[in-house]
Amino acid sequence: MKIEAKQINEWVKKAYDNAVKHGWHEEEKSNAHWLMMVCTEVAEAVQADRKGNYMDDLDKEGLKTVLANDHGGSLFNKYYSDTIEGKVESELADICIRVFDLMGVCGVVAKDGFSTFDSEVKCAKQHSFTEDAMVVTRIIVSCNLNSSISVKAEMFCVLYTSILSSVFEWAEALGIDLVQHINLKMRYNESREYHHGNKLY
Image (cartoon, rainbow, N blue to C red):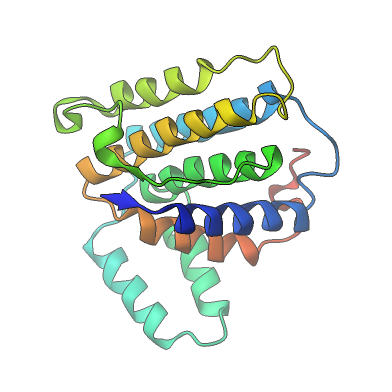
């Protein structure tokens, strides 16, 4: 699968703008903070897999019905919250959305797209879920945290490509349409309350 730079930059703007709107960038945070937030999403995906929380055929049919009939948005928001939120599909999307937000923080503009063929997740169908999670986590923590975000903007460009391509290949191996689930999660996130979940950050 090939994801073009234009699509990445659209996601970056949307993720960052929504995070600002919901109060997640009121204080300046370090490189380590934002990278750790990406790691937390990987951990949440692992927890969802441990519980066997995947969308089933009934969930998918329900989503189709909701998308076809919900013109005001409230039906979609409730369906997502009740049925999709917390499942592996949603958690993998969250990893990418965190990366997009980080790119927004860094002011990184994607000049090139990426392909799942660039991924460090190799033969993913032969790996366990946790092994693929570890591959992604290793990429995240390989980042040099000693320099400021602005100094390291170019390095983050390489980092995002590695993380995103690996997560997309991970999703492909699981039969998950990650483009769809990123768009769904972003739509849901737009509807959420300020500092949703009563979280400090």
